[in-house]
Length: 472
Image (cartoon, rainbow, N blue to C red; front, side, top):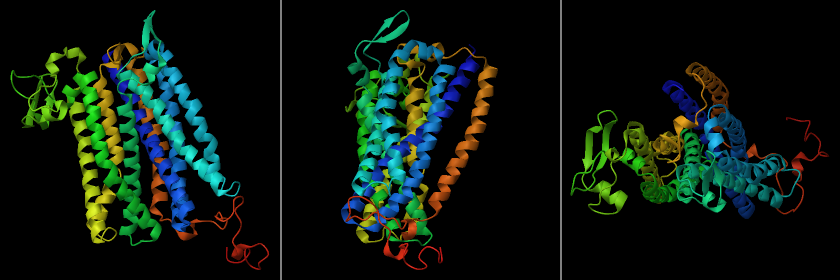
C-alpha cells in the first residue's frame, strides 16, 4: 500500500472520529446535567429547573442522535479501512465494544424514550430514575470505549497466537495501566465542555437582555462548574502525563519538542517553537530552564527521554502533537481564568451584568469541544506509528486500498458530513438562540404532590368554556 493511501486512510478515520467524539462528549455531560436539574426541581419545586430541563433535553436528544449516527460510520471503518487491525486485535476490541452495546447503549436507549416522552405516562419519581439511568448509561459507555482505546495505548493481558492477539486476562485488558487516567480525563473534559456550552448560551441571552431566573441559573451553574472542575482537570492531566511518560516516553518527548539531553543539564520547558522532524531540531524555541524536569519528573534536574533516543521510524510527528498539546493546555488555562473571574464577579454581585465578562464566556462556549479535539489529536497522533502500541504498526493495520479509492471515499465523507452534521449543528444553534420561557412547561406539568399521573391545570380543564377552543 502506498504512503499516500495510508495517510489518506488515517485522515479519513481522523475526520470521522473528530465528528463522533464531540457528540458523545456533550451527551455525557448533558445527561448528568439533566439529572441534576430534575433532581433540583423535585427537591425544591421551583419551576425554572423544569424549564431548563425541558430546554436542554431537546438539545440532548438531537446530540444523542448525531452521536449514534457518527459512531456507526466510524465502527464500520474498522472493517473497511483497517482490516489488518480487526484481524490482529479484533478478539480483544470486538468484545469490549459489544459489552458497551449490551451494558450501556441498551440502557440509554431503553430509558431515553421514557425520559423524553414519558412525562404523561409515568410519575415524577420513575421519570427521574429514567433520567438517572440515561446518565449512568453514558458513563458506562465511556468506560468501555476508553477501556478499549486505553488498551491500544498500553496493551496487556493478551497472547500472540498464529499472528493474532488472544485474550488471556480480561481484568488486565480492561484495567490496563493508562485506563484510569484516560477515563477520568475524558469524563471531566465532557463535563467541562458541557458546562462551557451551557454558560455560553446563558451569556448569549443575558447579553440580549433576557435575564430570567432560568437564564441566570444556567449561566451560574456553568460558571460554578468551570471554577471547581477546571483546576481538577489540570491535576488529572498531570497524573495522566506522568503515566504517559512511563509507558509512552516517545510521545512525551514529541509533546515537549525535546530532541536530546545534554550531560548534567535539566530538561527545560519549551513554551513555543517549531519542531522540525527532518532537521531533528525545534526552531525558535522559547525555553524555561528546569521546568520540564520539574513538571514531568517532579525533580529540579532529572532529564526526560529525548526524541533522538528513539529510531526515526518510531517517532511520532512532533510538529503536530507539540502544538495540539499547547492548544489544549492554553484552552484549559483560559477555563481556569474564566472560573476565577466568575467567582470574583459573583462575590461583587456583578456576575450577570458585566458585559465584557459575558462576551468572554460566550467566546469560551466552543473551548471545551476544541480542547477535547486537541487532546484527542495529541493522544492518537502521539501513539504513532503504532495502532497497538509496540505490537502492531499502523502501516500493517490498514486495508490495502489504492490511494484513488481512499481519496474518493474521503471526499464523499467530507461532503456528506458537512451536509448532514452541518444541518444538525445549525439546528442545535437555532434551538439555543431561543431562551427558555415559563410557558416552555406544557399544561401537563407533573404535580409533585402526586405519585402517578400528571394532571391538567384547572385553567385548561376540558369542562371550562373556551379553555381549549379559545385563543390557542
